[in-house]
Length: 207
Image (tube, rainbow, N blue to C red; front, side):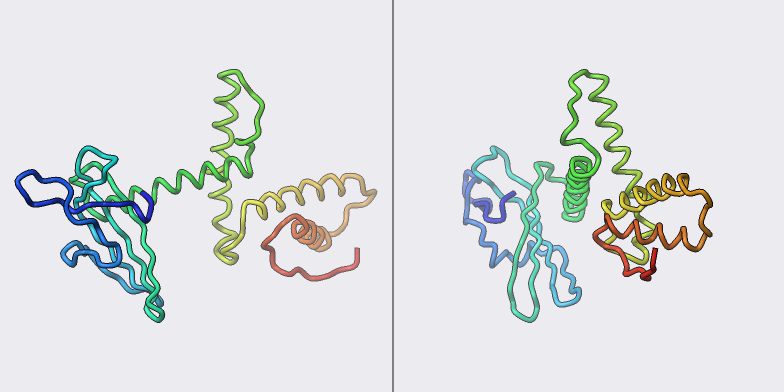
């Protein structure tokens, strides 16, 4: 839901409906579920039952407020569900999972051809989509060992590693005498740095 969505607290009159408009800067104290402090920020999670004029029924809304302790600057996200039985933590967890799905679609489009394939037949489309998401999952698993030492190592860096390996294999096949292992390793490391965006500085050498 938009961060500035107009929400209304329930009116306690004879016909419960729209009451006072919710003020995100002054949320009711009783709605606070938990508050944590990490680094320089305070993270408050509030849950309430409110109305929105675009929905017929009351909504289960969670407002996650992030406050910078030094400056007092604050921001918030508004999450909601029509399931009134969900806890605040459950709603937050569901939204985290939802955004992971969005990230998978993003990676499939950006790196694995999901955005530009030209297939129109059902079987071909199914195969292409499945292959794209297979590569999303496979690349995520392959990135883990790299990210233990390089947290920003990306899919593009991973692809550069494999491109470099293929180029090196094809180049070695054309040499009359194969080079020693040390030189092969140094060449591969240099080649893999050419197409990457987050690679460590490698030793310079004269080819």
